[in-house]
Length: 194
Image (cartoon, rainbow, N blue to C red; front, side, top):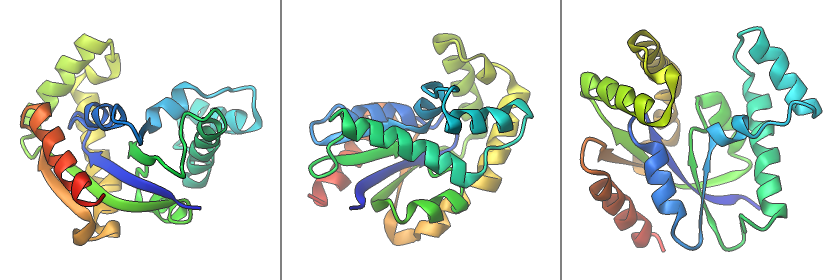
């Protein structure tokens, strides 16, 4: 059974986590941020050991391993009845991160819509990330050079995921609006699909 899924997609700092949490707070929606997978990783497991192997060498974790980690965590959520795939829609942010992951995940998720949170004003995005860094103690977001590298990586590796899903699946939303307006645009589309 494929999971009925909504993807929240955008550059770092575009508000994916905020919108995922808002949608996930509504009954019958389950928000799952990919970052949670890695933060909750048990490095004593074989999968955790494999992940550690790559990350300790400063290498990117291969797509198939990333998706396996994600699948293992989702399976935990199903077993604990936090996520009920027969009645809940899955809301993902941070995965798939590239076209390779999107292809692997086609067997697992049935994507209903991709919400692309756009923020073409890069200086505003950088300012937003710096502000978040101070507020949430995300020190990796405090360095402008690191932020710029993350944005280049997003453009090069993640943005092509949009073309993978195609224009008909994408709903572009201006992420520079107040979060409540972004949420309203997302909810309008979601309610049309019910």
